[in-house]
Length: 258
Ligand SMILES: Nc1ncnc2c1ncn2[C@@H]1O[C@H](COP(=O)(O)OP(=O)(O)O)[C@@H](O)[C@H]1O
Ligand SMILES: Cc1ncc(COP(=O)(O)O)c(C=O)c1O
Image (cartoon, rainbow, N blue to C red; front, side, top):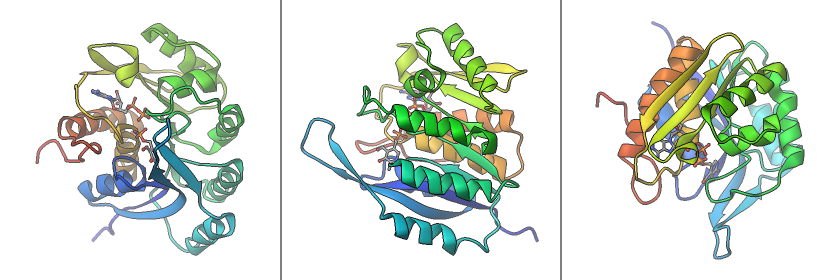
């Protein structure tokens, strides 16, 4: 019998469980995958304007988590919130040591609640990850920062994907989400040869955690041996269902046929 696939999430904790590793694990369980977590940070609710605080995991503890996983063979690694350059550097070193494993990078530079924050150092760091990454899933604002372009149309998305491809991204998915269009959530897949749009109606519900869930669903499909393009197509449906079922805290992962 084939063993249960294993995914490592290198992610933060969202105490409200909308996003972060809570969303990652909830997604893996829907696909029958065993999820491991190396916690990068703890996100708590705060009274000030941004609405949350991010507490990076102590660097030595973060390193010890990664060291604990030396003997595990993963089918995919999914990377979410990296709260500091130091944690990003340790993560980069870890994936450099696991080059036979598919890596799904969700470059969490811009939270839904955190639109305009300048994160140029981390943006540059994310680009250093590209040679070791199988799929990268920036949202619209993250794609603008990574590609250095303004994106207001689908053709801008395509131009940004081409720039990212030129910078070494193998499979790029730019998530238009609710930021590009009032009526349709348009995402663009691009692998430098094939470019494909995935579109769903915008759901007027809470979409906290949609990005984490989408990247985790892609990681799940890839871990199960599905091609990246088919993984993106099926994950788009998965996250759409999750948003349709969301509550006041975040999306609720559920396979479409359940
Ligand atoms: N309100 C919505 N209705 C339908 N799909 C959405 C909505 N918001 C986001 N999506 C989809 O959810 C996925 C995650 O996108 P997004 O929320 O933009 O990412 P992030 O959480 O990284 O900002 C994408 O496939 C996007 O198109
Ligand atoms: C730990 C953590 N990672 C990632 C995210 C990003 O969430 P989203 O999928 O909504 O972009 C959040 C947002 O709450 C978070 O708390």
